Length: 118
Ligand code: 5GP
Image (cartoon, rainbow, N blue to C red; front, side, top):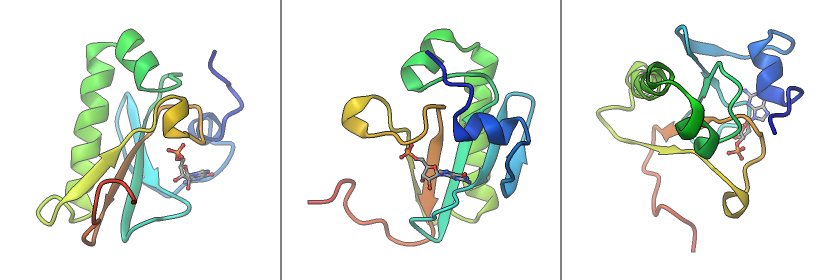
């Protein structure tokens, strides 16, 4: 069940501000409010999708293509495509997502080390 009061739904409705990086018909990219790396952007679908499971089952091919192209475009625009970057989409209980609207993290700008701590 999608929670229409989640923080990213409010960003999409313009109820709270964000630092917008890129937008197209289906997707929005903005800076993460609590950056974990010199480059830390989020890309979200404009549609109401909880996570990757919901998105890949229910979104159109156009929405899926838009999200992936926006992610790569933002990495390029932020100068991380040559040096390297990591994308993460926390989905489901074991991944501990904080916000129940699908978002892809784009992290880079320094060597990110091992994929998982420990
Ligand atoms: P998750 O843990 O769900 O994968 O990641 C949620 C991300 O959303 C976190 O990195 C957090 O810093 C970011 N975030 C939470 N609230 C806001 C907000 O109001 N604005 C922005 N720009 N990012 C947010």
